[in-house]
Image (cartoon, rainbow, N blue to C red; front, side, top):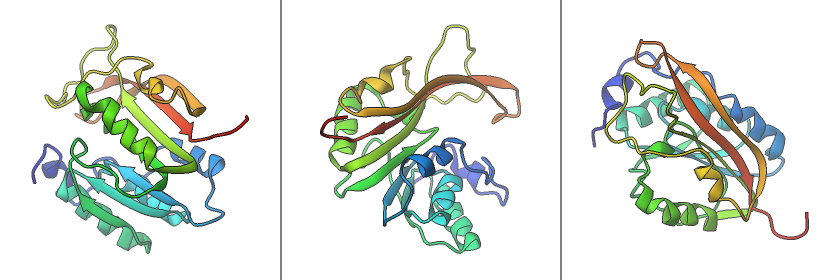
Length: 205
């Protein structure tokens, strides 16, 4: 299976680096692995976040469309001395059949087309354990932000607040919209991202 990142991930260097996303540290605060917790990294890329979670005691499963990315994830896991269950899958076709405590994804959800979002997020929510977290970020469109020079034809349009709408019945632990600088193409540009941490919770707050 080939996608646009296979060539980028096939080199010895790590395209996204090895440093985890800052939001990973919020997961440690909100749901620390005081007991065995299962975490799924959706669109793991080269594994920088998966390895962070595995090193901190979570039982990590990770997948990506890029087989080269999954290979790099396995390599990084071996270097770190941790075990991760990995597989290759298409985000838009894969559906959960087992429960997890944490679903994590950054830099991937913008590939989900509008017509399957409701069904896909319902699947994610149904297969999340009570008190579990969804830790997601998605790029959103803004008229004052120019398209990225390496923009992909498979990227889909998301708007501000759309991600939060899927969690009107969950507890919102963290939510932010931020503009950040990026050099992924070698050309300075900006992105706008919505980030959310939502908790599956029933009962009185």
